[in-house]
Image (cartoon, rainbow, N blue to C red):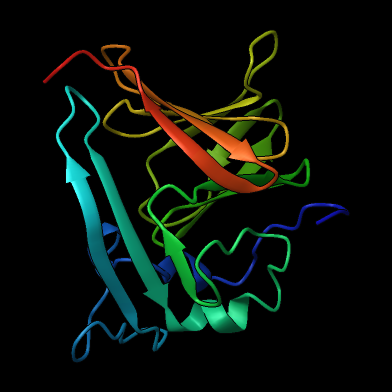
Length: 187
């Protein structure tokens, strides 16, 4: 979609996705229901292969609150339909003051610009975000484990690079992911 990217400001949207991966203690009531926001989360692994540093794991994830959130996030790719996403549907968007990474399980990690640096603004988010010039990518997010996620100017994920420089790259046809290339040495 066109227009200015919007950043989520609602504090509960970062609690979408797998409660075990949202970085803060989130109570779960019943099978997959987040007790804080009522989101039902379900994930299925469809394919998995080991990698030297970056395993290939294609999983589908459903978030019941994503269906409501989709009304606000009409510009985000929904490759599997309303409420559904997959592990490699990772998007970055920024409006110049705020930025957010929407992970493949639906979780949102927010950042706020402070001078020329980006500060994590979501509880439990220990990643760093940098704007990069002179490269084939525009944004680089580095996780606590030193995994680097590189995005183009439109927020599409271009590659994941490990601390030992092994990588996985992503190609698109329009907004749809069309190929994943593993450039790692054999495990």
